[in-house]
Amino acid sequence: MRSPVQRALNGRAVEGHRGVIRDEVRRLFTGVVGGEPFDFAALTDQLPMAVIGTLMGLDRDDWSHLTFLTTQAVAPDDPEFVRPEGPQATLHRAHRELFACLQDAVAKRRGGGTGDLIDVLSTMDFEDGGGPLTAGEIVSNCYSLLLGANVTTPHVPNAALAELTATGTYADWAEHPELLDSGIEEALRWSSPTSHFIRYATHDVQLGKVTVRAGEAVAAWIGSANRDASMFPDPYTFDVRRNARRHLAFGVGPHFCLGHALVRVTLEEFFQELFAQFEHFEPAGEPEHLHSNFIAGIKHLPLVATRRKG
Ligand code: HEM
Image 1: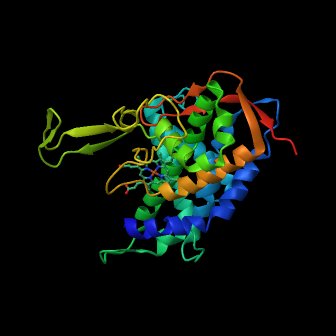
Image 2 (image 1 turned 90 degrees about the vertical axis):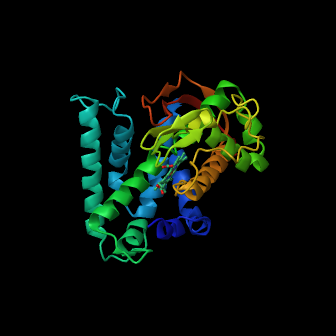
Image 3 (image 1 turned 180 degrees about the vertical axis):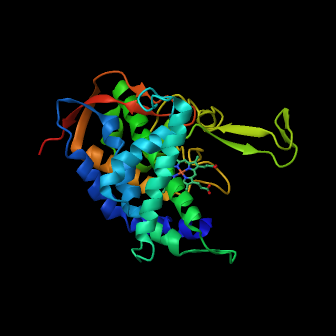
C-alpha cells in the first residue's frame, strides 16, 4: 500500500509542486508587518495545510479547522486545545470530527479524476493484488497524511527561529544561502517534532544491557537520539554548518516518513523566502510550548521582524 503513495510523494513528484509551495509560502508572509510584535507560530501553523491541503485537494475553507483538530488529536491535555469535557473526550471528539470531514472530502472526490492525493488513494490497487482500497482505508490514509504533515512541520521553523533569535545568530544562517540544506537538516535534528514512536517486540531481543521480551513495548525517543553526543558533537548547539543528515527526525526502517521529500522542499521554500524578505528578528516574549508527550513543539513564538529594504 505504501509504494503508490510513496511514488506520489517522491523527490521528482514533489519537485513538480515546488511552484505551488513557493506561492503559498509567499502568501503566508504577506501579513507580517515589520517592527510590530507578531506570533511566528500562528504563521507557521498555516504552512502544512497550504501544502498538504493543496496536494490532497481539500477545501481551503476547512484548512484552519482541520489544523485545529489535528493539534487537538495530539495535544488533548493542552489548555488551549482541551474541551470542557476533558482530555479523553477531546481525543475522541477530535478524531471523530477529523474522520467525518475526511469522509466527506473522499465522498465528494470519488471518480473525480482530479489527480490529487485523495484521487491517488481512491484509484490505486494494493501492490500484492489485493484490489482497490475500501472507503475506510482511503479515509484512514488521508488521516495519516494530514496528521503526519500538520502536527510536525511548523515546529521545525518555530524551534529554529526560537534558537536563532535567542542567540542572535539569525544572520549567520540567513546571509549564507549555501547553508540552506545543512541548516534545514540541523533544524530537523534540533526540533525533532515527533518525540517518540512505539513498537512491540515480536520476539525476545537483547538491546544493550536490556532483554526485551516478546510482546513488550519499546519507545524510541527520537529527540533523545538526536541529542546523542557520539553522533552529534556538542548536540545542544544549533549549528547550521553541522552535517546532521543522519538525524532520526523522520524515523527509520519500513515506516520511514512518507512526507520527507515534501517537507524538505517545503522547508527550502520557506527558509529561502524568509531569508529573502526578513533581515532580522527579535524575541518579543517567551516561547510557549505545546503540552503533549508525543509532539515536541512551540505553539506561540512572539517576535518582531525587520523587513529587508528595497
Ligand atoms: C517535519 C515534518 C515531519 C516529521 C518530523 C515527521 C516524522 C515522522 C516519523 C518519525 C515517522 C515514522 C513513524 C514510525 O516509525 O512509525 C513518520 C511517518 C509518516 N509520516 Fe511523517 N513527518 C513529517 C512530515 C510529514 C508530512 C508532510 C507527511 C505527509 C505528506 C507525513 C506523512 C507521514 C506518514 C503517512 C507516515 C507513516 C508512514 C508509514 O507508517 O509507513 N509526514 N513521520
